[in-house]
Length: 147
Image 1 (cartoon, rainbow, N blue to C red):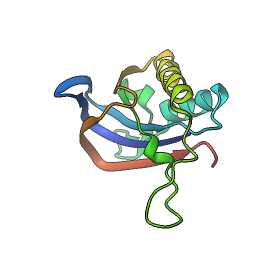
Image 2 (image 1 turned 90 degrees about the vertical axis):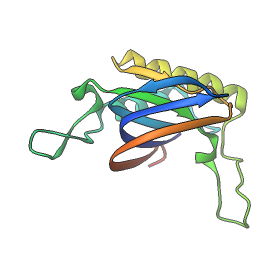
Image 3 (image 1 turned 180 degrees about the vertical axis):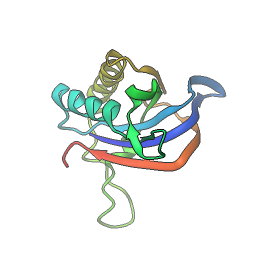
Image 4 (image 1 turned 90 degrees about the horizontal axis):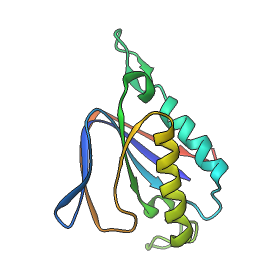
């Protein structure tokens, strides 16, 4: 599983010109489900996500988590995070999860994050989405369950 995390002032996702998810201060997270991901992987990554101290405290130090600030999360599925670009010029997606299983795991991940007292909004799995982000910082982080 790979998560591309952006600290945002606000973010939204639209599908066919309709807003399907929208947050204020928090995290916009692109979620890539790998072929070998399990529920245990989702649990581990959700815990890391909501507890990652990437928001500034009163002294301007990154010392607060999404939980600490009462922030929101916009979770957007993105299989291209699993692309292998090491050979040739065309990405290979063999590491990405099977779409049926990946959708189930993505939906489950969204629920796990919500169960940790985070207000969750999301995109639509496998849809052609437009994501609008007002990055705060900018602060962008990469989490890989293999590392």
